Image (cartoon, rainbow, N blue to C red; front, top):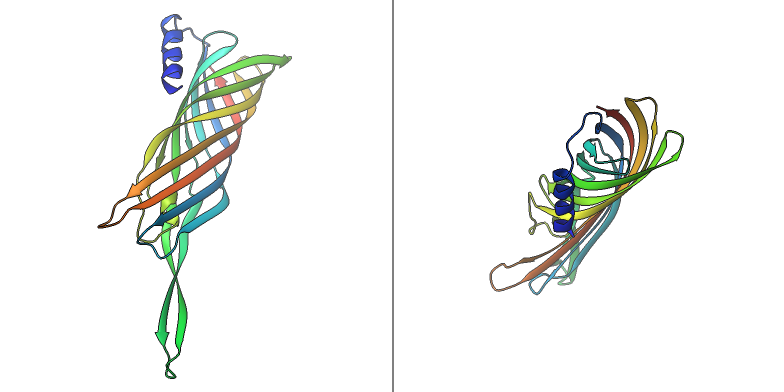
Length: 228
């Protein structure tokens, strides 16, 4: 699917001479709604662990696009989804004997910094039609090249097992509308969704630990656009 998308973009570009007034640039300002799930299990762990949480962050972005005709456009954008998780608290259980020889269980809570920050470059195609006078509706899809700055969601399920600086590619989808104020400027709104899902095997000495996480990002952005 990703190869087909890139091939379609290159084929369209090779068959069209880039014209003036077909380019556009957009400033995006909105909110990202994060749903994060992470789990880890292994034969050397005392128990499997699961984490689930939902958070909201700001999600500024910048987009550059080119209309091949009245219906189709190719877009390249960058969006910063912020840091939905900044720290995580882990509990550790231990036992000891009291003065009467009885075994007592203690739970220790430790908080670790786990900044989960993610950004994405997106390359995609948009299809657009005029719905009413100067009001346009559009659908888009493409490849999102995402990057975690520091920790990934995997680090939320075990204080000793985590990965950093991970990157990858997944499909994204968008739905939007815009109103053309004049020949140069327009305003709009856009909804998009990206879902990151990873599975990792860690191999400490004499054991195997299986970790997985899912990070769904839905964002709603207001758009200020410029045709040039």
